[in-house]
Image (cartoon, rainbow, N blue to C red; front, top):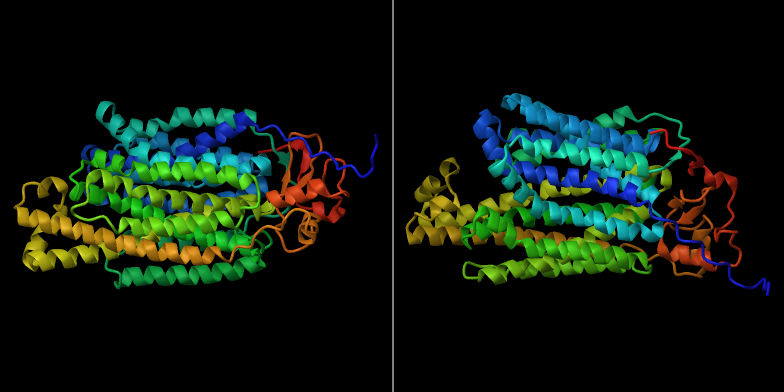
Length: 573
């Protein structure tokens, strides 16, 4: 009856803290919905407050503040408490939202949008880092898949909600609507998230944070202004590029010597982590570019209104949603660490090639349906990239890892829109000049009057030329997206598969040695913290190992627990 050779029972599955997860999800809703809601209301806001010449800064200053503070929020949470940092970011975001709603002129609105952006920088990264240590590895894919669903929902639901609020209430409520959602999130996180006290000595690397902020701001401004306010070869754009390069080079040197770096260089020693950041950048570029330029094709060529054009790319969003949910659950089963990103990038390549079929004579239903393949590919790749990042980060660096993957995706999206937007504009200009002549092209596009509403009253020859130009511009974007997707596909082959259960490599990795990730998870539902390997394959290995401890974990030297928090005390944050 007491067979010593019998396998040690698998540890009980820890209970998922549903209230805490719900609060974290609400924070992500705030982060993803806000920008989409405000974009719909901005024309009305400008009409009320005036200041058309400052119109673009309402968006730009928010993006600058959010992007620059994202990695800083992540590192702050690692050092001083993730729960406290996350709740502070929500409070700052809500304060900015209320002040934006109270703004009496455009200068005030821009100032308060900067404050709102400072808080927004910690919403996504804060939620991801808390989830990374709060949720057990066997539940991580399932929970992160729900996080991934927020993005397509925001892109579809945000403009619709913003339009409804602007038409039937008042544009100020596009900011006030954040307040009740944020308060519920604060209460849910305060009551439902219980994290251990972190024994961390050190302070944030101020010089590194400053250099990273300068680099991110330079890249964001370059992506915003290039091809719009200034030409790509103008002095301001070249200057911003040089500032970004110098700041990043100096930042890398500082981080290698800092005691508590904003982006720990040790994270990038993992091949999987480094590859995941490249893939996050490429996926962000492809996703944001296609989402930005597909509605223009739907409006100019298919004759859809602004609202309907957003609905016509709903298949792409549904594809992303389905892929995010499915990829997360499949990854939880183990053995697909390498298969998922390779499959996602391959589907993304096919999706981009399929979009090349769009033309001036493509039926509306078919044009809408063709977007689903791209959505599936982007969804699979983004979900697997996020999980690879979290599974290859140590517990103490979870915030920095979350901030890094969020930042690379954001910068990828900004630069992707800028570069592919320049391609789109160039092809449109070339087609219009070839069909109508340079004089007619200048009159048609001057002063921002090239809109679907104006085009309807133009002669048939002008309408045909405009449709051909928009289609040519979209094909330029899609060709660029195809190239980026192909680069992503090649890159995914550098990801190594997790060792199989029972293999010597798996045993070594599970025991804290070997070449795998050293990311660990502390089960906070138990009275004593116990470390578990992050990847599903390693979890299986430790459960089958005859030498496992009482809870199915390997005995380790005390020095290996240096990054594991004290599970007996609550998080001071």
